[in-house]
Image (cartoon, rainbow, N blue to C red):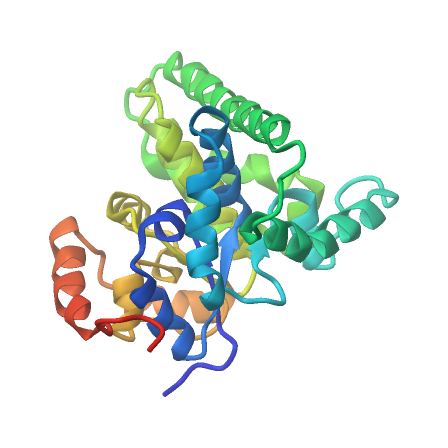
Length: 292
């Protein structure tokens, strides 16, 4: 059955490397494809070193398959605004609404052929922002690693991490269940201390916040899928490889509450081998020439 307006949020890997024919199949089945702001920021940060032409060419190539109304999925306080949540000072709401309203224009500017004014400064700022987030997470891991862990279980670290989030005024509005994947993955990273997370781990952690909305997070990073499955999070079934979606392996309903619990009950944790097997079955189903 063709889905109706189900939203797929694409991570950096899918945005940058998924075959155009694969995105065509997903869009053709009625899914609304949006690119995570994390993916845009990560590639823009890299463009501060490599230049922006490759990024613009790639986005222009896939733009016909991206949701024209909302091409970029935001995070942070602009994302909270889309959920009807005011993050901190109510006066910020107007700024968040303006930011969200400007995203389609920013996308159009990125995929266009005109000059990108000030992109170097923007890319450099994004690079700094990503590095700052990584530093915060690694600092927390370093502090956790200094605590004796004899007899401490992952479940105990998860409870402590969840208790920390409960105090967040934004989380109070919708509950920790809508951030279960993010919290569970963070707890696992802390439990694995003193092993420091990679930049990719930190970006994957941030991406999981998208699941506070009624979306499916689509990633080409099979290791991140397996890592989330290993936490036992109820939101794990809502993080999918694009090949799984081609094969129709998509849970119903939003990624929290009863629908998430039901999805988890029937969920089989994935392995790298099982994900590769699904990809091998789905890949021949793509059209030979996308767009025709």
